Length: 226
Image 1 (tube, one colour):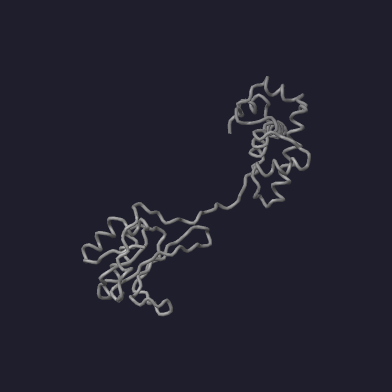
Image 2: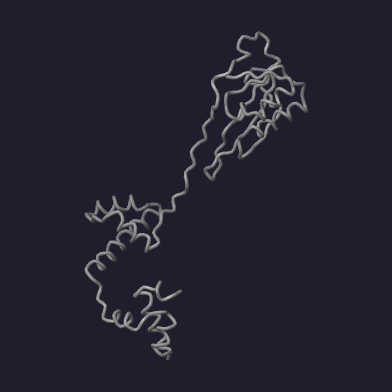
């Protein structure tokens, strides 16, 4: 630590301790990169009214921060101070809180992902089918984990449209939702079962990706959309 970074309240105790230990004041000041004029100007220092006010506001703000379990940021602390008839500018309060290391520790919030649709609605090829036994529906479910983030559970179902009897043909859990993710699930289903005539999905970007569409084309499976 250099003398330029040391403030008066920090430097004076260090200087005093070294002098009390028998070190010459000139050597101590040189080691801390503090000029003699600066040191002697510090000695008769009496906190100004502004400094005293800052210390008082800092103490009140820290009390509020601690009582909030370290969650409150400067905006909420400013509101709490105002309720106590203590008015302080935003920049001044922010600086005082930073000097006291009073920073909000509120956990980061994660917004639930939304299905990204990149193309205009494509045709629903199975809507008018009387026999849907040659149809596989596929879907992705969002699962929120304790950290607040989301995982993606992708599935491909069997042709039975009775919700109580649906059987999962293949599935996969991932932290990434893209064309490769849903393609891996379909490939696994095709390894175990006879391919369907249709695959029915929503218009999510993972299902309209070139990777997924090419996989369907290669296996001669028609893509139906909802």
